Length: 536
Image (tube, rainbow, N blue to C red; front, side, top):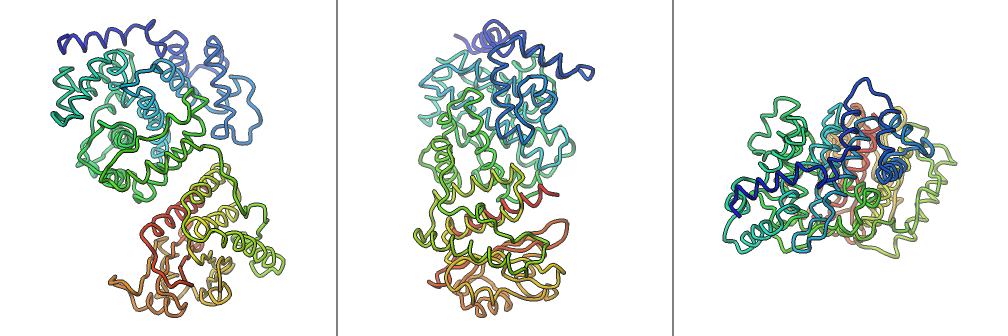
């Protein structure tokens, strides 16, 4: 079959509503009603109710923890529409139908992984859009969902040709782009855009399906260009995790950097957003009709260390989505260390000390970094953030993660005094905590104090007196005063005011802070910063 015939055949089948359930009558009406500013909830509900399977799935998703946050059980579609909004319901419907439409077994292709990629990309793009402050972030969800439509369509409608393309690329005879031109006579993105146009999707959405040149990250001038950049780069990130033939010139770390420039945040935050989005995707996968294990990324040899690590971590989430039991939950200890209150109250101090002893005693049974404990506690912290748990409870759980999961021998949460004039270690975990508590204290007016600096700028500080790093005299003096060879501290701020900082060291062994410990420490602190940010 000539390449032009392949494209024509794909487009013909994609245009046939009887062949593709995503274009059936109910979905077409959902799109029409949800975009009508004069429509009401009952009209959209009546449209969804005509499709029994769609109705069931929408109600199940609407009652999931990700969407139903303390509003009581949602028993009717009309109530779901009112509570979640027209755009959210439209996106849920389209996601369900896209998965139904293309969920077919092609063992040599891995169609399920392509659907997982589309589903995951949609959630990730929306989360980044929210971080960017885009008011109608739900629109970007659809951009992410359909970003790799061309590849899905070619694999579904022309599996033989798709297998030839992947075979040529795997043999390193041709690049992925070259195989598309040879077999299809066009790029996969071109195919996706033609299909989306024939389905009458908005031109703005169709434009986001095109590749994005990362050299343009500093030249984003308007909302449309921002949506394009977020969608394309997020698609690249997820593609690296799920598709063997998905190749770009950038490493995952470089793509994170491009995204961080556009979003206006750190690469660490982008990584944390990706992790949070993946956890949420795993929690909802079954409701959409995707078995959780389908979300497991491809594990393959790669020189990209970040990609390899995230693939392993996400593989754990996908295969074990259930929450691992916490060996020593601080949430049940009722620790009274509420920020902004009088920390000198004797009852609060007593409860805090008892909780610390409880955690320390149990954690000593498992000293050393424990990736499984890290993941389990990160899941708990994420759930707390999503459910708007008390901030002090989240900070205590983060501290537990630093101590038990990261494997720091001593961990501290330091907070300013109620009058903001000084700071002090309020909660300490590990051996010799008394002397450490006496060392982490000082006036907030001392601008040369490294701890004051990390609080003022909400930055991370790693001090290793045995390394060749260029350390300030104040940092070296601080390490000597605490009798440690290395330590790490990360600041917390809200609305220009210092909230406190986390501290960790390997004091008893005088060991250095390893690179893995640094990364894990920052992961936990990022969750605390996110919790503070979400509270305004």
